[in-house]
Amino acid sequence: MTTVLRASPRRFVSTPPVERLARRALRYLQSGFSVHLRGPAGTGKTTLALHLADLLARPMMLIYGDDESRSSDLIGAQSGYTRKKVVDNFIHSVVKVEDELKHNWVDSRLTMACREGFTLVYDEFNRSRPEVNNVLLSALEEKLLVLPPTSNQTEYVRVNSNFRAILTSNSEEYCGVHGTQDALMDRLVTIIMPEPDELTQQEILIQKTSLDRASASLIVQLVSTFRTQSGLVKSSGLRSSVVIAKVCQEHNILVSPDDTDFREICSDVLLSRSGLPFHKATELLWQLISALKTNESAEQANENAKSNIPSVAIEALTDKTEIDFEEITESKQIESFRQESNVERSIELTLNEQLSELLKEIPTTQDESQEGDFQNSEEQRIYQYLTHTDGAGLSDLESEFSMSRTQVLDTIRSMTRSGQVTHRDRKFFAVVRSEVKA
Image (cartoon, rainbow, N blue to C red; front, side):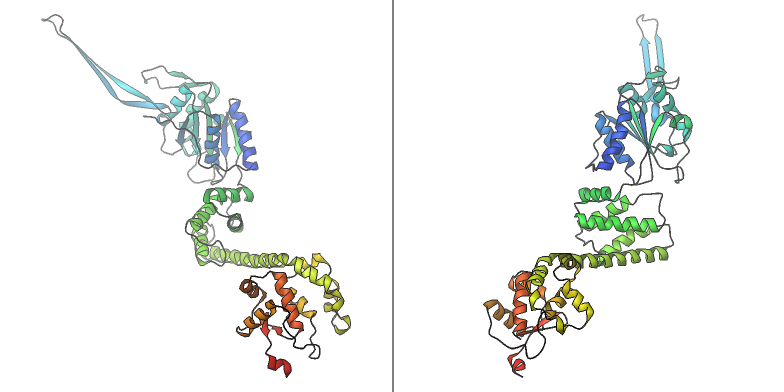
């Protein structure tokens, strides 16, 4: 029995490059030509073929190429017998017996698709031997399918006008594939399937695994770089990316170079697909993960700097008159203060540089620093908090008192000038009153 399928690829991911490729192939199919999708493994040839069959809105027959396949697997074969026995005893003294034995013919997928006008998807057809695919020649060109003369039926099947064939194949240098006869290739429109671009791969990961975009981008970047530097050009890294993303998403594993489970998954998936010796592939993978850690730290520092642009810029503009340039002797410090009014420079400042710029505006001599009364309740609360802790950074104060970065900076500035707070090792400390008097 031959089963008819309704093409419906699950969650087909459509991006502009994929849409352009699908439109190209659909033009030829709608004009009556058959299409051949060719490219490296893992580029989405079968998925696109099923999507095109779905767009044609016709039932589908699916065939997979195999080195053990025969022509009968495409067109059909004899299957069993039908026996007919007739006993005629109309005249009681005469007995007539007729015994007839016939082969049963069963249509295979290609024959049924040609007769009924279905869409044939022949996946990796060049894994079948070339002589097996000879039956396609007349079906694609003369629109006639030739059956064996022993099929007990008409030897020719007129191909339905709605019949279309979509074939896929890997390159001939792949293991297990055969060369294709020129006569068959001349009857097909061959479209080369390149590896999807990084944006398309990210979108596929997001839609198929529900992963966030930043994590999908990191996985695609890591897999792509590893495969390029390890010399893997015969196949795509899309399947590897999907495996890593799916496992991380379903098991709540953080997609980060610092996460041990993530590094182990990348090792399991990528090292086995590398053409390099194991120790060299391992060394290359760890180098790439370390590079990702460095890039991630730099991006985080830039994000922190960008989030503090308003407060730094405002302080630089409002407190500019308070700076005494005569007390600054180093040329780098003078240049730094002169550029404080430029907002573009503030983008490049990291958190530590911002703190340094803030402290430079605060008098540092013992005569100018003196203890004063608290100006508001926030100063008193922060002072009491610092006296009971071993120092605190700006982020600690923000989370502890639910204050914005601007509020914390203003309060710390006021308390530092009055001698209630000091700064060292990237933290702020409360100055005990006895220390100030001394």
